[in-house]
Length: 192
Image (spheres, rainbow, N blue to C red):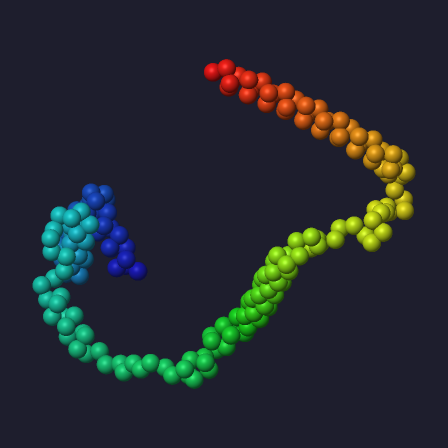
């Protein structure tokens, strides 16, 4: 604990804080504290990029000796049977099995839909008069969906006939205006 306090005081001393004659005397007598002083200055020089030397001169020799002292590990590639027996692989298989089943089912559905569409396209080419989807019932009469539907909202045959007459009148008016406009355009072009 005393050593940590001394290192903190040394750091403050280097920053210009807590400068005292007593600590200076302690620093001059203690060799370990002087070594810390040198280390702190080296760290500060490296952080401020004031020095090109990052490591001591004997660093490479020490690292070479440490690497030579390491025991050589013999690594080999595991066999597929060994990998399959690993607990991680068991969990992975358990997790992906349902996803694989869903993917297979989706692929089968896609093939079925594409097959039906191509079959219907071939049938439509052969008989263009027959509709692919019959939307009206067999008796050609639309019925109410609910028995509780109000009768005022139900469209009668008379209302349908009136709407058809109005649409016919609108179409006749449109055709007449189109012909008049086409005649005026053709007259304007012939005069040029």
